[in-house]
Each structure stands twice: as C-alpha cells, then as structure tokens.
Image (tube, rainbow, N blue to C red; front, side):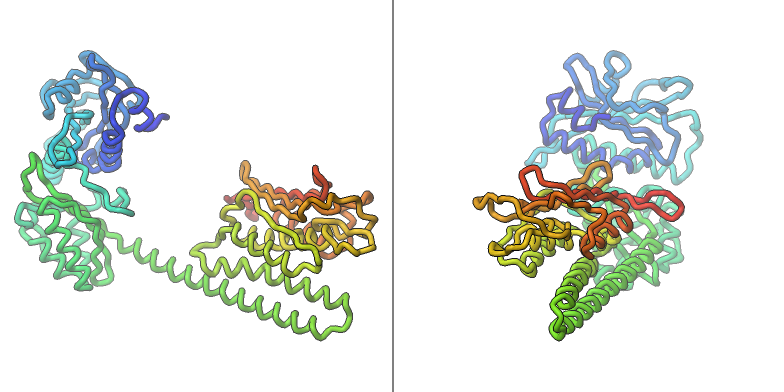
Amino acid sequence: MSTLRDLAEEHTHLRPADIDHLHRIAGDWQLLSDLSFADLLLWVPVDADGTFLCVAQVRPTTAPTAYQDDQVGRIVGGPEVAHLGVAYSQGRIWREGDPVWYGDVPARHEAIPVRLRTAEGEAGEVIAVVGRDTNLSTARTPSQLELNYLTTADDLAQMIADGTFPPPRHPGETTSAPRVGDGLVRLDAGGKVTYASPNAQSAYRRLGYASHLVGEDLAVLHRRLAGDPLDGTEASNGILAALRGEAPPRREIDARGATMLTRALPLMPAGVPIGALVLVRDITEVRRRDRALITKDATIREIHHRVKNNLQTVAALLRLQARRVAMPEARVALEESVRRVASIALVHETLSMSSDEAVEFDGIVDRVASAATEVAATEVSVGMRRRGSFGVLPAEIATSLVMVLNELLLNAVEHGFPPADETEAAPVAAASGMVPVAPPEVDPSLRPEVVVSAHRFRKMLHVSVTDNGRGLPPDFDAERGSRLGLQIVRALITGELRGTIELRAGANGGTEAMLVVPLARSTHDGRSQG
C-alpha cells in the first residue's frame, strides 16, 4: 500500500512542509480517535471540483470502527464528501447533517479543517480535512468518563483547526505511550484536577496517593509524591509548562518502588489556554524488567570480558612455550595456536563492549586481516582489502567464522606469496595446505593482494577470500588435504556454521575460497531462528 507521502506527492500539489505536518498529525492522532470514539480519516483535495483523496486512517481502540474496509487510497467526490468541502473551503468544523449508513452501520459525519501555522505563528491556509466518523450502532447515554473524553476531543479538534495540534515532538520521543486508556487527567486553567479516569486514579494510588485526585493541584502533588526531588521538580515544571501552552517532554515519576510515565498536553482551543490534558501510565513492571535486563547485560558483558582475558592468558602461555621449544615444527604449531586463540578473543572482546549477543563483524575482519599480514611468515608485502559488509552477526556465527577467516587469510598470505628465492614448489594459496608443486608464472606487475568480499542474499551470507598469488596445484583435492588449517576450516564450515565451502582457481589467477553460511540457525526441534 502506498504511504501518506506517496499518495500526497502523486495526487496533490501540497508542499513538503504541508506533507510533514500531515505526517505529524497521523503520528499523534490515535489520541484524538480514542477520545472521540470515532474513526479518523485524513482527506486531501485532489482537484478544484471538490474531489478528495484519503491518505491515512486510524480506528479507535475505545469503540467499534465505522469502516470494516480500509479507506486509504480512496478518491471520492460529489455529495458523499460535501461536508469535507465545507470544512475545507470555509475553514470551520462541520457537525451538521443526519447520520449516514455504511452498509448496516449507521455513522455520524464530522469534518475538521487542518491548518499549518506560518513561521510567524499565525494560522495558515487549510491544507487538508480530518473526517471524524462515529459508529452509532452502540450509541447510549454517555458516562462521566465518556463525557470528559468527548469534551477533550472537541478541544483537540479545535486545536487541529487552529494549527496548534499536534505539538512539536521532542528528539528521541515515541508516540506509543501513554495512551488514553492507560489513564487520563484533565486540569483547569489553574492546574487543579477536574476529572481523573479510574485507571489514572489507580496509577497515582500505586505511587502512594490514596485520596481522590479531583480538586488537587497536580503540579504540587507531583513534587510531593516523587521520591527524588529533582524528578519531582521536573514533573511539576512539565505540568506548569502545559498550562502555559507549551508541550513539555514526557516525564517519569518514581515513588515507593513504583514508576509512572506522564505526558502533559496544553488545551488551547481558539488560542485560549483553558487547562491541560495529562496522560499517565503505570510502567512499574516495565522498568523492573528494564533494570533486570540491564543487570543481565552487564553480567554477560563481564563474562565475555573475562573469557577474553582468559584466552589472552592462554595465548601468552602458548607464546612462552613456543619460545622454549627447540623443534621448528612444534614452534610453528604453537604459534598457529596462538593466532587461533587470539582470533576467538577478538570476538569476545567485541561482545564485552556490546549490549547484546551480536557483533559488528566488519571491524573484527579488518583486525584479523591486519594481523594476518603482520604475523605471516613471508617476506612479501601483501595488501589486504575488504569489499562489502558482513553486518551484524550473532555470537555463535561470529566465533566460528572468525576462525575460518583467520585460517584462510593466513594461508593466503603465507602460501600464495612465498619468498622470491624459494625453490620449492608453492603450497596452495588461500587455505589449501597441499604438497607444493612447481609455481606457475606470476605477473610481476601485480601487487600481491588478498580481498575479502561479503554480501547477504536471502538470509545467506556469501563470503569469498581471493588472492592473486600462485594458485592451486593441478592435483589439488580439498577433501583430502592433510593440513590442520584446512581441516579446521572444513569442520567449522560444515559443522558449526552448517554452510558450504569451495576452493577453486581464481578467474584472473590465484585462488578463491567461496563460503556460503546460513544466517538463520536451527533449534533442536528443527525450527529456524533468525
């Protein structure tokens, strides 16, 4: 389905600033819909002949909808939208007319003009119309709560017509909470409570206030209830700012082990401050879970930090042992083990600085590649380059994949680009580890280079490690290679990573290792998890 912006740009001549204002309304109008017990439809004029296009719709959570089918994208003209034409041309809220029928559903039409205030703060021209359509099939005598909802809805509707609703959004704020059903408090111009919904009364009771809210000065009450004086002052100042016609950011009040989120909105129909609307939500359990998660995350990060330290200790011990070993073969084996342990430590080091069990893998690959050129036993200067991005990988994939890439990169550097005076035949480049054969001719103008490429496609990670070295020997068989590095690569790819690997000659010489790793892991019962 096309978005609000797509529909407006395709069918109207609205300016970008006008469309942005319509986006702000659509981002905050669930409040008005719930207070009105009505569907809201955002209509924009298409032609001068009175044709309108519906670019957004919201249904109430407090009442049944008037529309079973979505109306977005519908273009309507003629008598059906005459009320929209009146609101658009005359710039006033339209409430006249008899109920209409949508199939078997009787509904009441209203139309609210939408204005965007000018840079000077004056009411601008009407740019759209909000249709407020109420399902009358369950109409009954309204309760005190419903009367307060409807009165507040009318005030906000007038503010839309004035161009003062919705208020500017503060950076980082969402529009999801609190909502009307969580708790509503209405204040008069002096800041005294004139109405509090039952849910709002319950939220304040959990903070320790057991009396009725009606008649209380809410700013003073917030200052008195808050456990932290600074929080109490901020919450109180938010109420006072709303009474002055400002739109303060959401505030939290902590008291007696409970937490309440508040949102204060000014009520200024026709530009006259008449009070404020305060929405409240008890978020005590949410904050408890947040604190538990923070504690858990800190514990997990500390575990990864300790694992990293332990692996570095193991690597240091192996390095010391390698210096004391007289046999060259044993020393080489120990040095290779040091590098393998260090590559795993890199993953745990990254996880120790992350808030979840996933890592940005590009930085790890770059560090492993840089280390491979520094520690590889070759006199040739080999360049390393990465193309594409691995993105964020879960820890269980990252740990195995970093070992695979470490082996492939080290072997590509050591075996693909041996010293110029080496008389023995070259081993396999890029993780082959096979018996050397006579090297083919290599273009001396080519700069020795290893390229790591990565891209994602349909939940699969495709990785290639390519060098422009001497290439594979004619009788190379990846399945029968005897070197430990190649065995580690095969075991990790086909076992831990459940992927595939193919070693082949590069298109322009050298060697290419192609890896395909699924990003969705399988659980024990056979189901996949992303």
